[in-house]
Length: 110
Length: 116
Image (cartoon, each protein chain N blue to C red):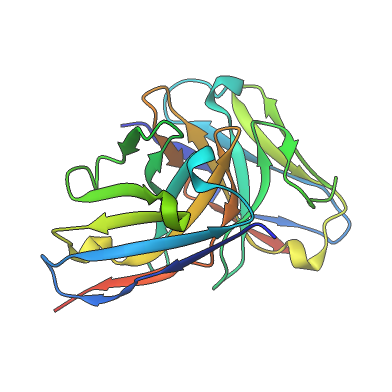
């Protein structure tokens, strides 16, 4: 069974930059997996940040960017702000026609 | 304004059935891929099911044969028929519009609790 991997937690200083990654338990992530990224704060619905690797969703500031780094998908946040403190999820589209979410990364801004 | 509003959640006994609805505004449900995603209490997101524009569907293995996704085009609504419910189906259920094989618009979610 395919497992999508994410760092369980990460911290960043206000104004700093951080890169969160999204990998596979077996194999490499490519654009063919259409990686997308979501931000979620407790009690709220997810908010779409990035889809199709690097397309920002409407209204998302350009401080958020998506890419492929090595064998993983990546979400980079620059100029981190206090309200970036959230859970971040990636999801990959598998060629069997299903989507698999990663376990999420809890980002702390301090 | 593009919006999704879920309804139909509640408390149901194991083995029971429930039907969730997701009313869309600002776009036509049948013209987009649409999915259900769920989140168990304190856990991460889990994709559940998709319905494509041509009406074809797909499901996560964990729900195959028990949950059925469909559309009511006359009401511009996405539905999820949930049968043979189990405790592990307890979650907030979100409907989501899809774009670029990702999820671009989300509803606010509806809570389903399976417990005796």
